[in-house]
Length: 246
Image 1: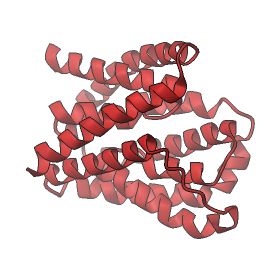
Image 2 (image 1 turned 180 degrees about the vertical axis):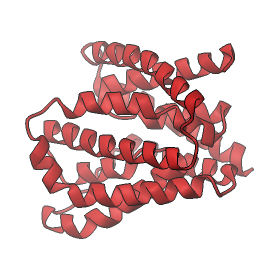
Image 3 (image 1 turned 30 degrees about the horizontal axis):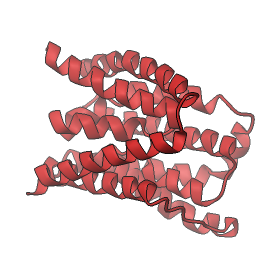
Image 4 (image 1 turned 45 degrees about the horizontal axis):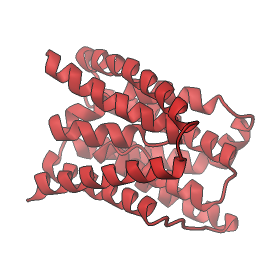
């Protein structure tokens, strides 16, 4: 690990931490979008594990409905774990440039939804019908692209959860998904000593960024900040698609 690599990782997770602290989402998406431009996708994903794990433990412990949410969304999260395991196997057997382009498509789609203020709605009575498919698809995308359960976040928003419920529910899904992902990466031989050290190093910039993001959240319009973040992700995603597929 040379100094250039450490600087790239520190900058990526500092920016991602600021976004996570300011809006409660976006840590893995932002970090993987930046890192994928400099590192290969397979090398970039392992750096996410320790920061994501710690950030989501912190997030899931803030709220009083943990067990209720665990019981409600167990099928969603179990399906996501299956998808993550399969997606991680695919990641180490398919041309990385194809998957980097797919990551760009996922990021562009997510950013576009935010910029256009698209807020899908799903009746609660259809929850059990949709949960397995959404969970598995989200897990598959996580394993292949590193975009940690992004469709799950959209799905939980569509169910119309209250703000605090949503924050804790997405934190729970991300925490379970990160643990499953770490196991899948270890099974593929990617979580070696060097990867764990690099991922642990990324925790410091992440926590510093989160503290800055929380401070920033109290001082600027959250809607304006979200739009700036979405526009930045849109540009990063488009660059990933271009560099990978063209």
